[in-house]
Image (cartoon, rainbow, N blue to C red):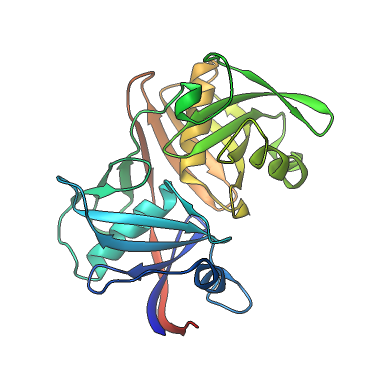
Length: 277
């Protein structure tokens, strides 16, 4: 099968984006892995499919596959790229889109030639909704990892996150603790692990070990989760610049019950065709 694709990135979090609107498209786990492979395929953190909506009030449906082939609920950097893709492909001329995801509806606002703003919805803090195995909701949870006890926030931004505060994100043990947190038994669907350094009430540094992809240059939902955790811990203000290895996102959150707003860039890198078995 010969498949047209668009390679896109949002502050270094990179994607292969495919059009399943104009023609039906289903990918096997092996095909996703091949596309994502940086030596034998195109190479990306996630493969994204733009597809027709299947729910009332939605403009398009958005499917997200991690590099390991697993389908996941949400991707903040990806949804910005998807919205730009839909416009560049002539599939819509709307400046406001409602995108259907496994994690729930997502509202996207496009500015001509500028950043993309996304209403990521209200964070889910109840353990059963994350999901996270705990008896009751708490600001911090103990997590036994690698012979030590970590203190984390657990929440969902449409996908599960663990957030850990560190003194210096540059030397945080992301490569060792990240996979242990990702696959921890208390996260039945695995988790994204965020390592957050608070610089000031309006700025943090963040590295994220993403579920099914490893450490990436940026994670939009991870940035949202970190700001939510920092706000709940009374260490951050309402509007926060999040510095990730690939660039900066602006996150705004007024507090519990309110949606999290994310603003950042989305860019096309190149287009091409790839042969898939």
